[in-house]
Structure formats: C-alpha cells, structure tokens
Amino acid sequence: MMESINYLEILKSSFTMVILIGCSILSLTITIERWLFFRKIKANMNLLGQIDHLVSGNKLKDALSICEKQPGPITNVVKAAIVNHQKSKEQVSDLLTAVRLEEKTKMENLLSILGTMGNTAPFIGLFGTVVGIIKAFHDLARSGSGGPSVVAAGIAEALVATAAGLAVAIPAAVIYNYFLRKVKVVSTAMEATSLKILTHL
Picture (spheres, helix red, strand yellow):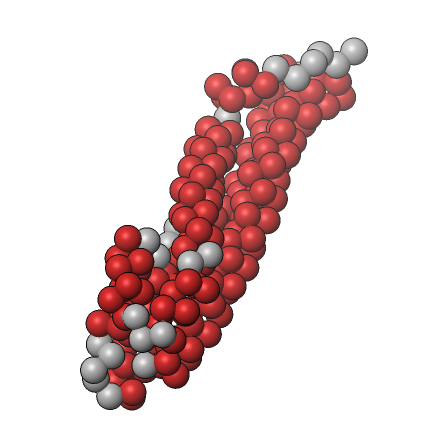
C-alpha cells in the first residue's frame, strides 16, 4: 500500500518547491501593495465631481487645493492643467498627455512580475515534476526491488510540484488581468478628465 505523501519532506528535497513558495510570497506581496494603491485611486476618483464643479465655476485655487491634498493619477492630471492653465491649449494638451503616460506607468508598476508568475510558475512546477520522476526511476533502478509501488510513490510526490506551480500561476494570472482592467478604467478616466478640464480652462 502506498504511503501518504510527506509534503514537508518534499519541500526539503525539492528546490523547485522552494522557488515556487518564494514566487507565491512575492505574488501575494505585490497583490497587497497594488490593492492598497488602487484603493487610494478609487477614493481619488470620488472627488472628480467636486473638482469638475469647482473648475467649471472658475474656482481654480479651491480645485488645486483638493488636488494637492489628495494626490493620485486623476488629481495629478487636473493639477497639471490648473498650474499651466495660462499656456496655450496645445501646450496644456501635450503636457496632460505626458502626465497621463507617467501615471499609467506608475499604475502598471510591478504588474509585469505578476504576469511573469502566471506564465512561468507552471513550467517551474513541471520542471520539478520531471526531475522528481527521473529521481524515482533512478531510485528504483538502484534498489532493484519494490516494483511499481515505489515508482508510483515517487511520481505522486513529483506531481506535487506541478500542482504547486498551477496553484501559484492561476491566482497570479487572474489578479494580473484584474489589475490591468483597473489600469484601463483609470486611464480612460484620466483621458476624459483631460478633455473636460481643457474645455473648462
């Protein structure tokens, strides 16, 4: 009868499992950091109506004060427009485009790591499985006894690496696409705000 899988022993003997645990910790850290970052942006977006009302009423100092107190992608766009409102419309438009690009880069920060985890973790797990299977057959050949049960136990342990790789990759891929959607929504909001503020100014 095949013995139960000793996960602690697998962890000690498999360097790929150590790598995958490191990948999962890194993914979790980035997820928390980006979630807190986008949470602030959501609060920032709730000020849009108030800022739009102040700018349309030519209360630029009040609008600028709000932007300085609540920095974020959208308020930074508004702030850049207000500070440079005496320049020509074309100059302000070019400046806002540059600010939007800078803010989009900030929003996409670290997301490439999540995308990489989603793509590479299954391959790391598969590599660990292949190495484990090679080891299982090598142990069988060296012992010369034990039959299929020995190989089955070794393969079962080796397949844990593939399962671990998928366990890291699937959440990373889902979270990566979720944050990309957030970036797209905020980028659209920044563009819409730029057009509105240019019209008001």
